[in-house]
Image 1 (cartoon, rainbow, N blue to C red):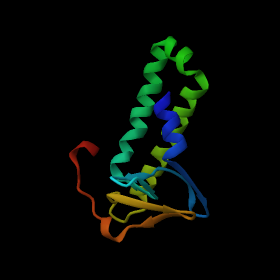
Image 2: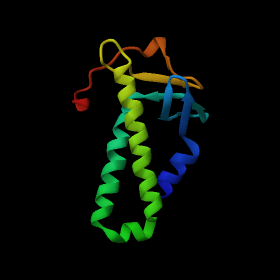
Image 3: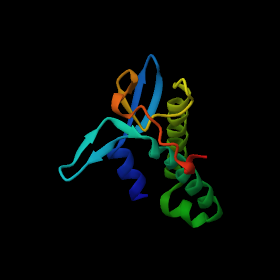
Length: 125
């Protein structure tokens, strides 16, 4: 519950523009914390984690009581939004491979010229 609340309040951004409505998880830099409007390709594993959390919570009704049904549904909604963003990261590329990093602005996606490669990680299969 605290994880999802903190995530939503601090790192989730939504871009609503003529190119579509996208949801992303922003990056935080260290040692001097600042938030950067970009999403790494590895964030695309989070929708699956959130969806599995939602599905496993159905098997444990006390989770619904502890966290609340609306919070659990919010988690699934966030998973769906992030998955749609990740799919668009793939679909918009000529190669069909998402870049390692995608930046977001008020219009939608913005190519990061230094990160347009894909490392072909086996875990994405």
